Image 1 (spheres, rainbow, N blue to C red):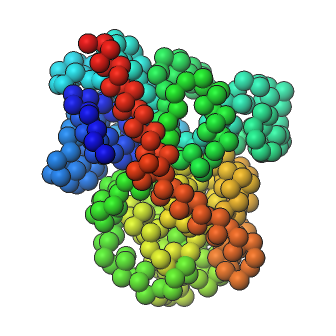
Image 2: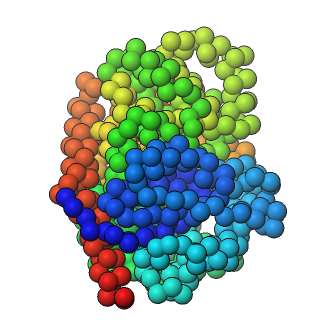
Length: 492
């Protein structure tokens, strides 16, 4: 297919968090493959994480450029070099300081924006960077927001906002039904912190996001229509504007190096990891990963370790680097865990090549925090899920997986983690509950397990077709390009 995209220039503003940056870099390469010039605004430390992937893209002839902005860590009260949310390991007020630092980027971004050639045609901005709406307005170009949540989560949140049902519920832990959605979904107030904001800073920030959304031309979601058809349809109606599905974005990574280095350099040698997986039986391995912002306390990690041991199944366990990992390492060496699981356990401290691992035929289940990227990556390779949400949209994603799609089993966690209060909250999921959920997903002889596996296999095939030429996501990408092209032509 030929794309007449000469002089189209999309400028991308990803949020400085791995779960937001990774899909935006995928979008950059997808658009560049269609002939669009793409510029990504980010900071030096974040740019370094994607150097290899983007260098290969540029070497192949794609027009992708990086603009690096000085990140005002000192001015915002952040530690030196803290340019990404995953670098925060101290109390919750650091989150507000990160948001403040990102807001401080506006002036320098605008100055550099003025110098871009060809003239930008469109801004694609993470919805959590509301000031980009002002930049778009100033330059008379459309702003499209990128949403890292599922359509299901977005529509649930929208219905909760317009119904104001939360205002009549006093208890944080009382379950209630979300009104006005296709399925009967029950949640608690504490599981939806995006709606129930408490601090004044949070309320101001959410208001800024809503104002920017009102000014936006439309929104891009990392999903595919066939996965959550009713929710894509209803959320499109609710927004009363343009909504495009670009996913599954992870499937744009065909090259083995692009898969292995998606996000940043892995903490384990890819070939060593693959050789270990090659020794395992098909669909026998449990893959465990809680994302880049997980702060589970050591005693909770020990419960998980004991559950993995008790399942008697091989596992790959990815643990975020930091003091928790160091304490767990000490426990592993002192309590004999390593010896007892020798040959069937691979522990990775730091960043893992997740798409590479999940794509391996030995993986039979994915214990996930239900971050939307991870959830969709599991679905995209046909792997059923064990769900353990931590915070943000993750409890809603769990409901989509377990109650709507019926492709996963929950460990039973009901209360979200609160930043800075992890020790006070203590162990939230016991060993036996973790083991139960893993075994329910991995037991291939059990009827429900077979049905889950077949359902996720079909969704995997649908996802692959969606991104192929003529597929639903492929066509949505085409529509965005054509739409912006028409707007650019009409304005000249």
